[in-house]
Image (cartoon, rainbow, N blue to C red):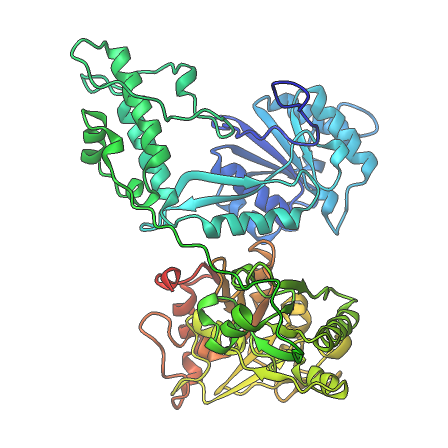
Length: 605
């Protein structure tokens, strides 16, 4: 800082929230991204126009439905008037914009389309048309033709009613990493109290009541500088608020109440804010001092770290192969917890072990994360095993930390033999396998009397990426497929195709209405479960945004066994005749359903 104020550094965005009531947004393209943009605009109370080629039939399923429900208006390029000869797309667009002057934003999405993908030259041409009419534009994957970008956003729901609230957050990396922005958004949401949406609604109600006149009418209130509450403001509400005076004017009364709103918003617990009634608010805004609320803050004592200077003489190195469980730190075994917190000198962790587990490791212990990415898995595996041998020879206790259970697709066998060949007999510490834990978190019993008599756990991808042979269909069997979501279309084809020329299935094909659930980030706060049938699961996954690794698939009738009042008659004689009806009850007449987050209670464990 060269002066008394911060020096601005470029590269950021001016993050704004647009009010679009009585305005229109134009979306060019009709794919799934266009549908996502349309939904966001509709939630902002905007009119939505979709402009694309090929007619309504070329649109994705979601847009077709919204068009049929008259939520959006569809226009075909070929149907637009054109004043030039020969017909020119830019001229058509210009004429269309002239007839619809209330369009204020545009999103060009067909630059990402696989069919009739818009060229850079064409994108630049229509961008100039928009700019000539002062319409802000976002062009997907072409930053030079963007006036604004979309954040990775989340709109909070009321934790009790499930209704969407006014509270939204958005994360942007300014083009440096869209997936990173999505991940950060999920982590931010998962760490906020569940009541935060309801709390924002209550604060809004309190703010409105603070502006109320004595006669019950609400008056427009012009705030002064002290009252401004911008998201990026550095102002604090921690200034003395005058007590109520018998001589204060109506304006002074409103100012006092607004300042109390600011203090309550700043200092009260979210859980308290979310449960305020109108009577509570009236009491706050009358004579009560909002700081009278005592909030107990529990502070944990700092942990005593082991001395870095003391090392036992002639310490013998050893290697522990440890399973971390599915992710939730409360599912660690006592043995694993002891290994991480008391025994480890070096932790060599797989890349999918979550921060919630890694954060338990004392700060003085070195942690290395495996660099296992597509195309580098074998090299990264060798690198971690060699590092373990080097450290163990130096007398260190090495914890090789793996997700789930080390011997369930965790390469534990390979590592045992490798370490043994180098003079170290590793100790294998079991972990809770995600193959069993994840379905439980999703409310799916992998075995259940009357539904599932057997269980198969298999992988969706073989060694070095080779295809694997999947089990054939048995009505009484649950199949858990690990590491297959990234190639889900191939997996579904292998399960359903009548003819199995490539021998990718051992047995008969699966009926299209067979239930399936995709469980992502099982046991973590941002866990997601997408449930459907084999015939619709690919579309369901595509329609619910970015994937959240790690993920797995659960296939079989156990997926719906505990829905509602339960269905234990799957294996009854003639049970197949009821399959369509039971799937209809399970999905509620829809093609799929999605559920996010953990069941109530896990946040306290």
